[in-house]
Length: 465
Image (cartoon, rainbow, N blue to C red; front, top):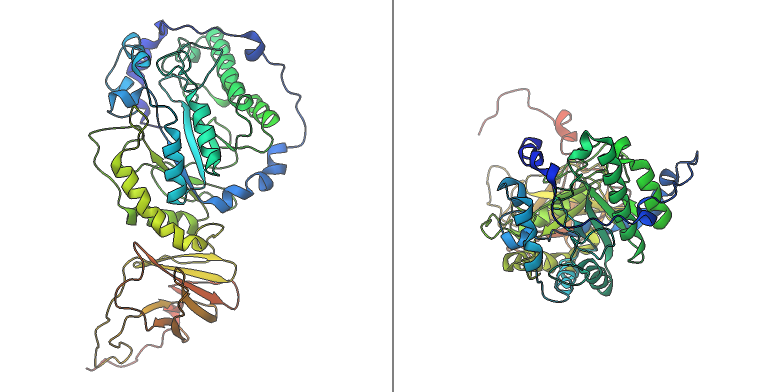
């Protein structure tokens, strides 16, 4: 993933000499016949159909795993610590993960309520986690002695999950990875190598649902020949979706470590870590709580986006215990509240301090994070009663019925000009980390907390107690 560009430059100066492991080059793969250009924008024409499943899925698992896991100090350890390439290459011999570790990831993803998985096939370090004919710097030819990407694909499919490949364009290991910025011959070699690896990934693993490019340093899209690369990808995988990190707009935007909706009509997916690292980092204990994860997921859905949440497996492929604990707790919540997430969306909905909102058709889902418990009686303000009440100001659609989503238990309510109140609720929250009320409305719900502001009757004299 990304770090500020100033942290990359000092190490890239060393890369002219490159590494010791061979790049074999196979012309048949590297120099494929260019695809004919067409006037029609095929990507645009097929986007709605290709992305239909993705818009319903909402929640995915990101997996960052590579040689950096052996160091256990962040996925950028090679650059941040200034490790010589030849020394870093030795890690490949000692990378010996247990067989089929990806089965644990896929089972956990399904239990957490995640509908798709995206794995790092090659991160910035340049090590290929798959069997390739283009380099010996790969899992099949080094320590593991097998294709780890194939194991991932088989594991995800076995759990009914969609399959995505992460691929870093930036490559710290390849001898042309930095030289290509100023040497045209090196650029041609490196771009051919890059296109060749992508072609293998799109050819050797059956149907692939997502191609997730990352970091297009140091070239511009026309130098990467990104349009040609995407044409090749769509020719080999007509149903795939691609992101925007090869310098082109792609099918969806990818805000990182933040939830930020794209412009209207533009699909987006927030990718985030469970702690503060993408790869395994044994010293990073800044774990997000299940409540934070659930709130992030709901916020993404309200904004019309997806949430791609990362795990960083240990060198043997096992998942850190904290990650398992958090995702299992999230899964307990999604298993009972999936109707408010999968296939749900935002709309004309406000945000709340104690609540957030999603909708599906004429149903408004009220996600209550901070349960009101007993509202104290205030004698001089009869609006307040000794009861557990959730109230919404500015719901501009008539309510027909309300129920607790997880249990199906009906909830009584009163609706007035400015407010709808849900009453008779239990003292303790029925669900954790958020209780969801399903509010059936007569039409598509519109909720604007600010709407009553200009219409509230105001006293023309002083207020007396």
